[in-house]
Image 1 (cartoon, rainbow, N blue to C red):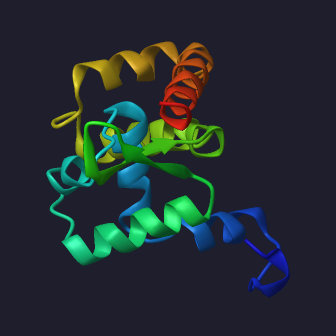
Image 2: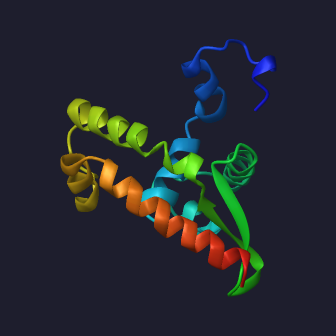
Length: 143
């Protein structure tokens, strides 16, 4: 992102330029926490994103360095979307948004693993996730 063309240099404003729509954080949530990789997996999320919006957001998240796109080795027509380190660094924000949502709307709909993540914090999870995703990207880069 070219910060010279943004409306403000405020870090919150810059973040919202990348992620301020109602779908991007949900796509990253699914990629990071639920290990969704395929277009059809994201499309099956309970929020019901439309196909044209999903395609647009995946392209935008790839362009902003949040996801990396790879050919699917099991299906030559499909792609896999793997979170980058830049994308995974948003996990504390996602967890805090989850925490806030739970305090305002209750815990219904929060998966068990997410409750555990909320209790334990993100530091250890992030470290492990960086390693796993790095290995995944490496394997997909050199099939």
